[in-house]
Length: 186
Image 1 (tube, rainbow, N blue to C red):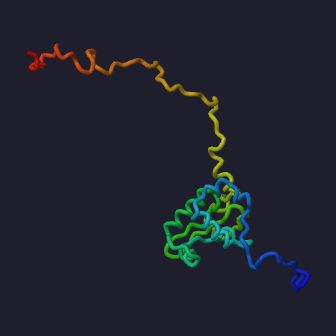
Image 2 (cartoon, one colour):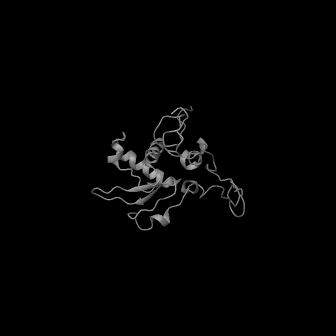
């Protein structure tokens, strides 16, 4: 309609193309966890964010069967990118998949987890909202309790000059050498 409302009275956003969208907060995009990801891991994060609806966080899948329909071809790339996202704290596994046809379920950590009866035991308790911000805080800003100490480069007993050549020099005097015979002299 001309007034920017649909017939039901809800406001319509005419500034963009219609359809759903995957909002990823700037705090995620600017986090050290995201910035340190490889390109395949960043792409996989977009794939999992694409699946998220208001109440599906915790039931998102990254199976090779599903990703093949989205253009992913290498199982190895998928596994490496998935491991990277888990380590970075950007996704969290809620159900461990198994063969022959049970896919693992995941949640993004910038949204609230919506508990489900099929989650593995302890999945809800182990989930941490914003885990990606904690993943890189483990060793940042740590300083020794006694302060930074400069370590001397020389050995503690001091440097002593060692003799590495024989006492007569590298080549002994030719006349004192019994093996030397002067055959050129007349």
